[in-house]
Length: 254
Ligand SMILES: [Zn+2]
Image (cartoon, rainbow, N blue to C red; front, side):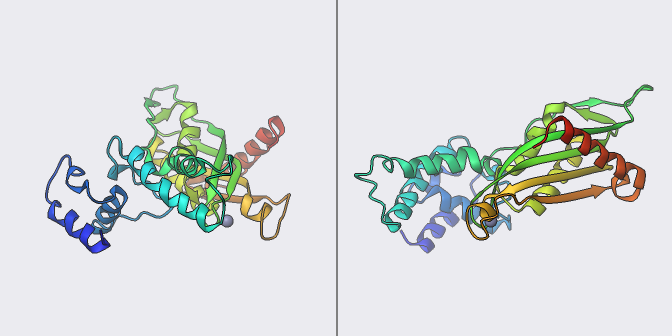
């Protein structure tokens, strides 16, 4: 089926709500979802979350669709996937790995972060700094990014569980990212979950695209910082944040 025929099919059923995938059995599900996102002006870059466009069971279908596409890539690389025992099944492994692991943060909804009130007379007013280990992938080369994020907030009227900071950070990281963007994404999502306006995110990470190829730098480290509210404007708060990071690094050097 040509691309325009697929879109015609999709348009024919466009007004129907509910089980709207039923209409498109003939077409690729990936085409249908991409068309819908384009029609609604939804950005679907490598670092964007598109979970609102997926229904239950879609990931399995998308993995089925991606498998022959990865087979084609292996064929183009002139790898004998029929006789090489290590390359048999690699296409499917790649498809599953992209959807379920290294890019899972694109397809899953934000982690549940139950908020607890922090509004009594003895509310916590200090700084909270959480160290979160990150695994990500650069969207330029699909090479691994490994590092840690330090997330600091001065709590507002609510608090979230300590593990939630890391869950949110990892949800942002498990996509195709740029470290600069990732730092912004984590700050925005932590702000959303906690309501805090005073916060900072500092990431240090190594990048496979600088280590395994290109400049082959084996000890390079990239640092990015996003500061908001008092973390940005108040020298004392900013210093406390970075002093906290240094203490954390003494406790657990990366
Ligand atoms: Zn890269």
